[in-house]
Amino acid sequence: MLRIVLGGVWKITGVRPAWPDVLGTAKPARVKVELAGLESWDSSLLLFLFEAEQWCTATETPLDSSALPKQLSDLVAQIVAAQGKEKPVDRAVNPVSLIGLAVFDVLARTKQLSHFVGECTLAMVRLAKNPIRFRWLDCIREMQQCGAMALPIVGLIGMLVGLTLAYTAAVLLRQFGADLYVANFVGLVMVREMGPMMTGIILAGRTGAAFAATLGNMKAGEEIDAFETLGIRSIDFLVMPRLVAVTLMTPLLALYSNLLGIIGGLLVASAVLKIPATAYWVQTQAAIDLSDIFSGLVKAVVFGGIVGLSGCLRGLQCERSAIGVGNATTSAVVTAILLLVSADAIFAVIFNMLGI
Image (cartoon, rainbow, N blue to C red; front, side, top):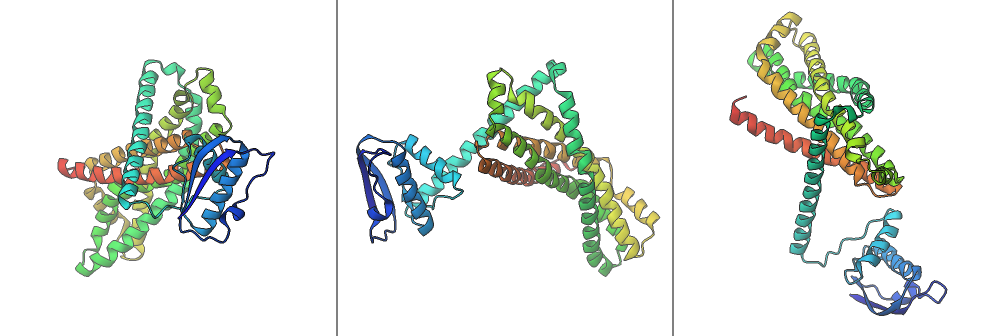
């Protein structure tokens, strides 16, 4: 391990040691930087530490800067982040410590999400008490963007999913002479699972990412800070119209996806299995009841709220840079999909316990 102790006076106008001269011919497996007797410093010290970060990143050598002051570490991290390079992971750290740090990180993120959900809940209460202060025009505009403008992609994906389900069911059911029950399979799966789930995933990649990018750009441009300075709550002004819009539109899009999926199954049943369209439709009506439709709509409402919360949360947490906007967009999609799958699994358990 190469241990470097920094001290004395670091001035940009003075002579600054170069990293290659300090390194020499050494090829350490790990580098540790410490401070001792540091009198004063300016950007020259940051440049030296940045050179060390660059070399460690290029050679995949872990750099231990835990002994540096937090202010100095944050400044170096901002310079490294602006270059779009990640710091190599220190493999010499105890794996138990890494697991513990990961657990604390998950707990911190969970706390942030819970705090944001609580703020949105309070904003909902304020909206119910004083609906005239709600930005209805912005909400209607967002409903058009995440609802009407999403109809083509939702319909296409819904029909393709219905086609795929029908082909899959046909391969199995025709072995038992139960071709007609393809209608039961496609109808139930679309209404209870695939319709709401595929709609949620599409909106996560389309609407959730758009929310994160929009709010992230506003955060980078300090527009959100301006709102807060003027006493305007960003939750009420920016988040609530988007959250209400996507929550209201997701169930409608899910119903549209269900219909297109059933029609896709009908096309396969008519063309491949030679099942009359009337027989397919009657069988579908017999297989689906109101409880199935209700369960799918409940899922769709929750999925819409998850997409809106994930996109807005990551947008408000965005760093003040172009790279931060991209990272926030990616994080919004990943977070939304993870929460969608988790919520769907929870719904499956609850509905099974309730016998729905």
